[in-house]
Image (cartoon, rainbow, N blue to C red; front, side, top):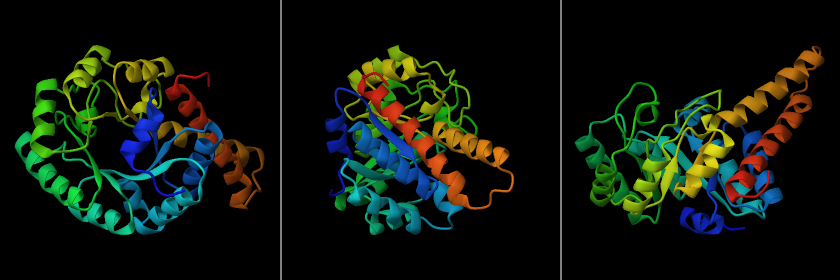
Length: 278
């Protein structure tokens, strides 16, 4: 079906949350699309700046994701995640991606507002949905360091000043967690949802337990980004297959079950975010 815009996916996902899953390999994209078809839920295929660097350019995987989305019966959007340069955003949009995230959270507030405002204007001229990030500088995780929190009044002013369409906020999650022990501040989520006039995005959701994700959606979180959980499932499946068959050399023999494992993980989260039994 035609590529779906993020706002339409948000509407389609309600009253649940919209699952957004990061793509590193073609198998990720295939698995996520298959899970959306099986669960009959909308989904976002996300490509990060780090993935673009890994592939020495965003075009090959972005074009593959766009084609997978177009060929799928599920409602799928393709999104550029955590871009820190205007150049990468321009490239992604030129390829056909209609949703991007500009991450200026490592800048001070004034510089973040200025850069985000300029990129938002450029995106809106082309009908592109834009997400941004606001939080305190806090090391590698920036706004998503465990102790970082988004101030609701500052968030309202940031959205007003920049005109962004969605906002990633710091409420207790952290990127790349291998344990699901993050405790979210649901009172802050509810306060932000009541005051901020655009959808809220949760990054670092892999570290949040199932009940925490459901609570976050119930308190007003809209888009839920998940990456590390998929990578854990893919890697552990490949490791098991290679351990049990040390002479195996055909990648299809271990990537096929790895893809199936990722699909199962995505299906779990899609049902979870919909509020239905996994």
